[in-house]
Image (cartoon, rainbow, N blue to C red):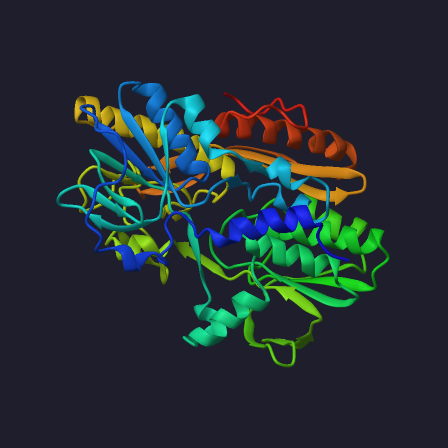
Length: 452
């Protein structure tokens, strides 16, 4: 059983386009010509990266300062959402539901969509070099997302890293990785299917647990003699623990084996065996999700720092301004703060960063820190559809210079609230897609949580 041809062609096309901040186009870094953009006498804000954060920044800078020329640089031709992609893996939403038009969004919100790959940065002269020419900017916002860090498992063996990625991709970047994982699920005949949870802060904290649930549900519904083995180095489920624990125990007994506090010591790809500190686990198939770090382009641009052995954006955490680079801001999942690396966090943070940029442009000063908002629905059952939910803001302690969760609300009772939360999930998705991309509702779910 395989993907339908229509979805395969669409995702295959997306796979051909590197991310907006890919290093693949670095051979073009010495090209010295202007990008084909109209001349402007107004200030120009360039945003690199067309994910949740970059789209939000581009839209909101233009809303706050209509006279400003805003350019969104992104190498993909169309937007595809990671949030809700776990449901696409098991055919609960279509690829059309996740896929949206950059050109429509730019037209609706009156900024320029520039289809190119960022390759280099001249900080002194404030010029962004791209695969399609140089762009002079007054302010630059980088929203480059994440890269994977396989070093714990590879011990520096780059050939092993490439093989691990190619054969068992994590599927936490949209496109070909998701296509590969969906094919794995559809063609799975039985045995152990290994999933992993990264250590530290990673993209979408509940997603590995949600993915375990929906795959286990798929095995259960299709009477596949298989089991999801979820290997987690964390001492317990990192978020929505009550809800996921209930799902593992009451919905998927015999279909999910959760191994908490378990470190992978070695992965034997030839024999399909994972070695942990406690045991050896054979597997029929897998998706290995390693630690995450800020996108490598930050290091190339000299805007990264090492924290807990992982590279992250080197910024002022209260203003998002890059250290050592005039009029450069960095937002989204590359941030060093401990906020959830989730879509809703990045979207609401994009509004904050846009306001900081406009304030700096107009007054020379940035604004006091304000909190992004994390709102996250996780599917725990696909037949019938049931979800759990969390929303939280963050607080800042100026004495310790630390951030913490604040005003957190959880809805984890699957039997009581699961069906309603599943309906709210689609209402949330319609709302955020419309916010970023000016789309019309496709599911028409209801959500009282999302605030414009």
